[in-house]
Length: 366
Ligand SMILES: Cc1ncc(COP(=O)(O)O)c(C=O)c1O
Image 1 (cartoon, rainbow, N blue to C red):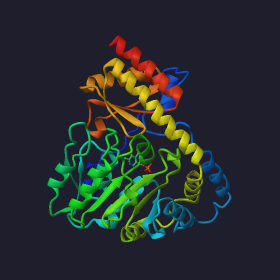
Image 2 (image 1 turned 180 degrees about the vertical axis):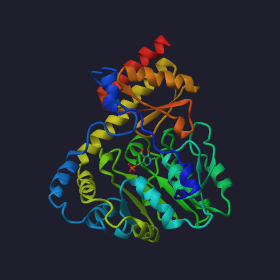
Image 3 (image 1 turned 135 degrees about the horizontal axis):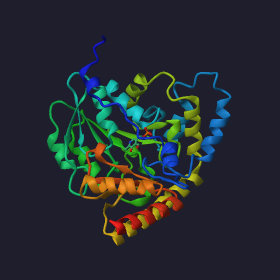
């Protein structure tokens, strides 16, 4: 038998729940609200789709491995040089590639517990130890604890801003203060997957893509505000030395022609983006009002999702099951290390109405 390395053997395989179609059939649901993955339920950006359609006819050629056009557009948008932008098969793929690009020997990754699960998975898959400190009170990143936890092996620090799944954010002032304190041979990965939403929800939200620190790397994605999660396209912005290393280790023809085209199209779809962001900022308030009326404990969020603290796993399970029976799909957060919490994505108005009505019905019968 082939010996499977311990770090891979210990990884739990991804176990998807029942497929959505099957649940809909079994529960005989007439209408559903899919609010479990922080996707954009307006559907993909139409301009992105137009570009994909045009690009399809070139699918017999390999895609541009340098991703010239998309990187140029992103560089212009964020006022950076072309050499300071990398693209990949979603920001998760870029994150995974960071281990190849920057880690060696016993280098460790430092982050908080209660953040994006993929971080722990890809670190383990790459045989990199993750050192964690607990989230601060209020479920935000504890920057002081992170700073105090830095040791000789710390190669990089991962920050999710805003944090998925809790929704809390690190302000401009706190982030800059932290970056200035951390030794500059430690890479600071700032994952801003929900940047577009956060920027609209708070004037204090930092734009780390505009920073000029040689050890800061910003990750962004087209999966959320631009609505093209299935196409797989994300990007990184940082010092050109960091970007050069990332571009060296990515698969030669990653991302595909369709993904590059979708990104190019999405960037031009300002109307779609504006509508998406406005919807989120308006609809999120309806949830807050509902949670207050129902006495449900929530964390104010700077993304397109909100976390409820239901105090125990049993109550989370109860809400999850009951919501599902009413056609509303949300995310219990046990896998994120928060078994007493539930995350709800802010959807389109009709879905939010369904979810809010369902929450009222369930809470009242509890
Ligand atoms: C914090 C965070 N980073 C990254 C991602 C993944 O983005 P992508 O689809 O670009 O891989 C997600 C998706 O849920 C996320 O929540």
